[in-house]
Image (cartoon, rainbow, N blue to C red; front, side, top):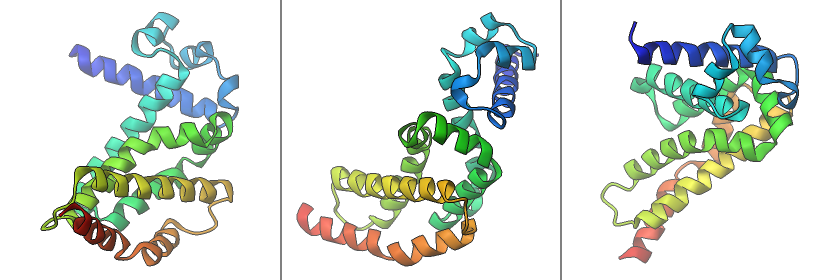
Length: 192
């Protein structure tokens, strides 16, 4: 078996152990020993792949976001992407809440920020076709929507996810409909 495949398998096994432990206890109460004992690897193997538990957690979220997007890349519109992310959080509620309660919203936002931002920027760039808008302004719009969405997701999670992913995305769509495009048009007037 190739070394890279074995490395990925080892990381996935450790991530699964971390998820299992996060379902029952706060992140700051989980030790590397518990993770390594649960998945049958030694501490040296853990440290070969990750600096600490937070590094493993960041890797886990990033990998799962990539898998989620790759599985559904043929149907990704803004709404579809948001629904997929919300369903992921809903399915992994205990882990997301553990992260949020243990590390706070800044860390949870950091784990998802790059993936959400990348998706937002893709949408902004698509909407900006035919307009002369600076990269600075496009990045600002993508950042604005990323931060707003992260705040909504945090509140949704803390409030017990009362709305379904579809209902929450519908509310977001009503609120933001055409706003991104209009912002780009206004920035285009400034940039020309």
